Length: 224
Image 1 (cartoon, rainbow, N blue to C red):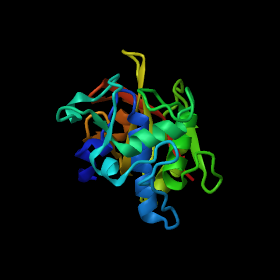
Image 2 (image 1 turned 30 degrees about the vertical axis):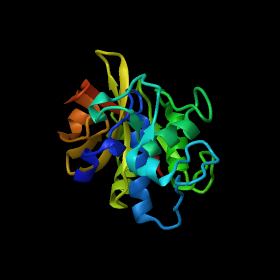
Image 3 (image 1 turned 45 degrees about the vertical axis):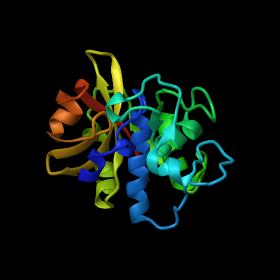
Image 4 (image 1 turned 90 degrees about the vertical axis):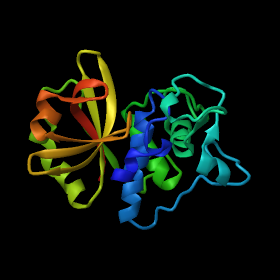
């Protein structure tokens, strides 16, 4: 997991791309454990939204849209963004439509579509099921209702997208839940690439500190 704390590819490249980075990580980990998911976006003659040349894949895709750019990842001009995050946004977002690559949040449907797109190239595929559990307004901790299903994913060494509410800011942010062991939870924060260890009660009930403030993970997306 330490490798995910370095490089533009695992840190959100725009302000609202936490969901795209999380989809990439969850999909990548799933692909390591399951054969048959070899979809790639490299195409030396790009024909579809999100496809890139090998050079763009390795160095990032040049963009002139500077809205929401994570400047901490840039080494100067031209400005580049991660090819996979961009492809996920272009193909899975539900607010603007196919081909849009700007700074856009992802709702639950977009996260489901994003994971499916990463693995198969089709955001609407039936080859795998991605479920959303919990809701942002719930007062019942996730682990009270869904601990068994969450631990099932971790037993299979699969990651989960964990969505946090930040009441003081009235904002939301997507993390990757890497594992749960006894009453400890390990999280990856796409905002800054940090791996966070917190007590289960903090993560799902009382609140935990991170780059955005104090939040509580209220709902998740997991591959079934």
